[in-house]
Length: 187
Image (tube, rainbow, N blue to C red):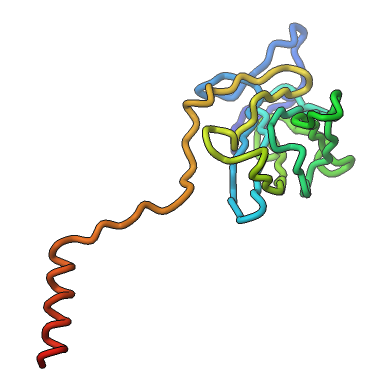
């Protein structure tokens, strides 16, 4: 944004009491983590992760994002974040850590045009262990720099369409088709 506040000398340095100066949002949190299902392929699905900083006085250097999601054991490719699976139990791999690539996006700048980082994650589908039904497209837990982010309850997530609804054929369409057949056969 072209805020005059961003151009003031010393505005991006912390105050003595370290109180934040936040961009006005409906949630008034300093960080927003956005998880967006971009594409649902036959064998894969692609998610976009965007982290936005709403704090005018703080940069986040060497930030980390920890996500708990049941399909993280099938991560195929992460495009512009580094990724490390966190598997404290060998049989369960539902947690992973995303962090910025050194000298590329490891610094999340203060609020403004440069105050976000984003990446895309490609995950393979395993229909035996995972589906996109019932909110499973979204993470169970998210932590930014070690602090848990509040997520809406799973039943408030939008449901994803799994198939097209069968179209209903109207009586007028059937009548018109029948009339056409009659004219062709007797005409």
